[in-house]
Image 1 (tube, rainbow, N blue to C red):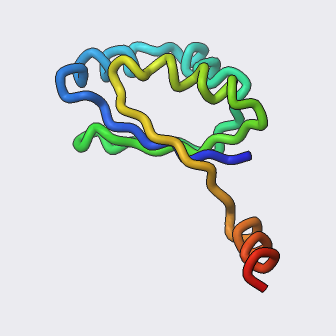
Image 2 (cartoon, rainbow, N blue to C red):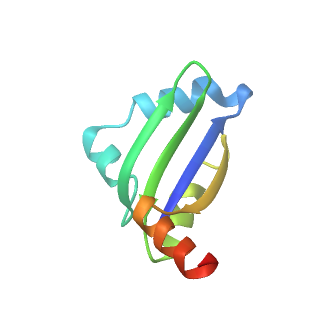
Length: 95
C-alpha cells in the first residue's frame, strides 16, 4: 500500500531539524526508511514542508519511520492510489 506523507517542520525546531538532516551520512540517509519502499521525497526548504510517497504493507514500518521525526515535525499521512488503481476502484464502486 502506498502512503502520502506530508510534513511541516515546527518553527522553533527548524535549525535543529535542518542540521540533523544535513548531517546525515549517505549510509544514514539510505537506512533512515528501514523497510519502507520510497517512491520519492521532495522538500520545500523555504516553507519548511515536504512530501514523500512511500509503500509498505506493514503499518509498524511506516510508524517507526515517522516516530524518528515527530518530536520536531508535524506529520500527516494518507493512503494513496496511482491513476490505474484509482480508476479500477472507482469502476468497481460506482459502476
